[in-house]
Image 1 (cartoon, rainbow, N blue to C red):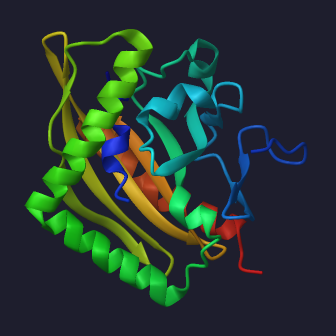
Image 2 (tube, rainbow, N blue to C red; image 1 turned 180 degrees about the horizontal axis):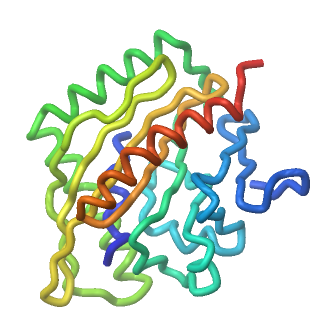
Length: 231
């Protein structure tokens, strides 16, 4: 249940032998991008296990990479559940189909629109409801879960903003089997090699996870941008 809220944070591969084993080499709109592992304790799950996260990805997006704690990888099953901390990278299918170049001006407008959406309660509720229904339907098809409910996420404010990155925090309650847990997540929009990436960092609802999410989101976004200099 701790991982079924991932799609609510979305607003809108090939392995390489010369990469570190925990990193991820992918494509976004026809452009190769390198996604470094967010810390030494995490690793990319690989193509064989990446499908475990598909149920939590909105249909409008494509899953690019997924990172889990190294010691959890051998226990990872489909659907991926039960992790306190994990990360995923997604791209927009619509932008990919058109190989859309995201300029600095484009990215600035995307950030402005995102801020407006987060601040509009009715629009946020509508987006959250549609995403929740999609995630729940996918999960039910996988494991016949009948009593799952996902409530509307609550924005907790921005945590980073730069020329090519914007990140904010949200929290969403998820209920199943009479138990409700709250998922903390950082959503990060990034302009990487003129492509738009969505990076997500998730953790439990506690003070230590909040500090970890903030620090990881900021450091990871810097590392991703540094690993993909403009050509």
